[in-house]
Structure formats: structure tokens, C-alpha cells
Length: 353
Image 1 (spheres, rainbow, N blue to C red):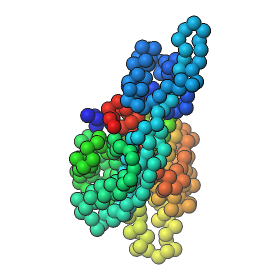
Image 2 (tube, helix red, strand yellow):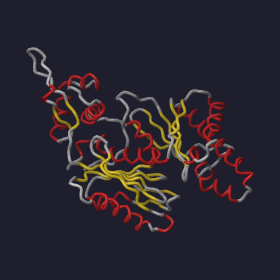
Image 3 (cartoon, helix red, strand yellow):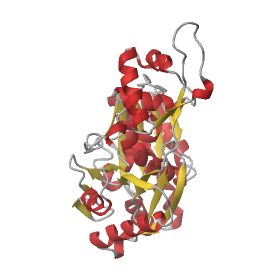
Image 4 (cartoon, rainbow, N blue to C red):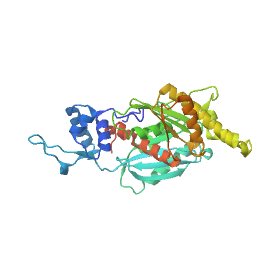
């Protein structure tokens, strides 16, 4: 059975490390895996044998290299198989569902209408399950795992609490696990943004990276060592005592609706400045090398990124590089793929066709 565990951890087991490297390098040998991981030759031999047996990698006998009197070197690559790794990015108006193969290539994807204001928790989950069934129709492949990202927070048992969805301790994972009889993992969307980056990083790259998401919810996550962790709660500062409540799109829109359009610029600038102050405190506390910005607060107001950056540079200096994910579509696509691939990359030998 797949252990729930923290999602988006960097590869820890020998098999996970080997699969990670084989995926990043189209052709790689066992001796190169030994060098890249620092693991012993017998350990790499056992790990690759298990991955071969599981059908996750294959030998390229046509590229065998001779080494004199020793055994020839047979390169390895990711194997083609019939697995479906499903990812679901829950949204307040629509939910994105994506099917991926073990290389992370998109097999199929679709958006399912999920107007949260009009649906009960039960109906919401039924819409998602129906969407998965429709997307899999006619596919000669086997669903082996499902990953879900949502706004809000996810506890150790996988229960979701999200104010913008109206959910409190909703066990969406158990419903989907019962329906599809496959392992299911759940994560907040904010750590999933970082997860999409750690999945493509080389082993040994442990530079701390911070993500700040500001849209219909506000959240932050940090990658340190081999883990990605959501930062709960966000730092409370004098000017912004409750950022998760006062800086959401809904809270800002309420202010905009109550004033003349001539005052809109001031309200939007205040939001950008307050987000900059929150980010400054996070940078001082966690010392990331990079801060990734995502969400409508930075995308819907063209002036926001520059005003945000000015505050961060003034208050925190240039200790961290700032990087903006340029579109909502890119964010949704990245987190859907990341949560779909997480079980494969974290515990590959726990999945079974």
C-alpha cells in the first residue's frame, strides 16, 4: 500500500533516485548511476533490477558498450508502458484533470465545470469522478494512481480545509480511493508549484526555494533539504495582521466594489505592497535563494509585480532572485502534472499496474 507520507519529497530510496536520474538523462549506465548517487554498485544493481522487473525502465542492448575483458555496459532508459498517472487540480469554477505517462507526457486532459457555490461537497466530488471516467473512455491503459491538488490546507490524513471551497476536513482522497481502487495522494496547490520544480532538479540541488501564491487564496511553501513544506500560518505583521484573509482576490474585489474607479489604483498598489511586506518577512525567516510568484494578484494587475519587487528589494535587499510564473494556465498545468507524477517519483515500486 502506498504510504501517505509528505508529497514532493526529493528521491530518497535507491529505486527512486535511479528512476529520477534515468528520467532526466535519456541514456544512462549503471556505473553513471553509482557516480551520480554515491550509492554502491550492489545497491544500484538491486535498485535497477527492481525497476526493470516493474517495467519502469528498460535496457538498450542495441547501445551496449564493450569494456575489454569486463562485462559490457548496457545503458538504461525509461520504458514505455500502459500506465495512467492521473492529476486533478481542484478549482472554484472548474477543475483540471490530466492523464500522464511515466515520462510525464500528456495523454489526455480536460476541464470539468465545478462551480463550488452551486455544488455540495458530495456533488463536487461526483463531478470530478465523472470527469475521470469520461477522460479514460476508450483508452487501452491502466490507471495506477491519482493525485489531487486543492487550495487551502491538507492535514496528515489527507483531509482538505479550504475556505474558498467551503470545505472543512473533506476526505476527497478516500472517496476517490474507493471509486478507483488505486493509491491517492492529496496536496495543497501551493507546495505543488514547488513540487513541479523539484521533480526536474538534479540530485543534490537543495537550494531553498520559496513560492508565494496570491489569488482566491493566499499561501506560501518552501523547499528545504529533500522536502517541500507549506508555511502555515503566514507571518503576521503590523500592517497585514491576517494576510490569508485580507489579501485574497475576493477581499480586494470587495474593496474595489465599494469605491469609485479613481481609487482602484491605490487599493491594488496597497495589495502589492502588503504582499511585498509578507514576502520580505518570509525571506528574512527562511533565506531562500529564489522566490517564485504565482497567482492572479501578480498576473491580473500589470503593475503589481514591479511594485511588489520594489518593496522586497527595499526591505530585504537582493538576497533572493524573484521569478514570476507568467500565466494561470501554466500554473494549473504544472501542478496537475506534478501531483500526478508524485507517487511514481517518490515511491515507484509501490505502484502496480
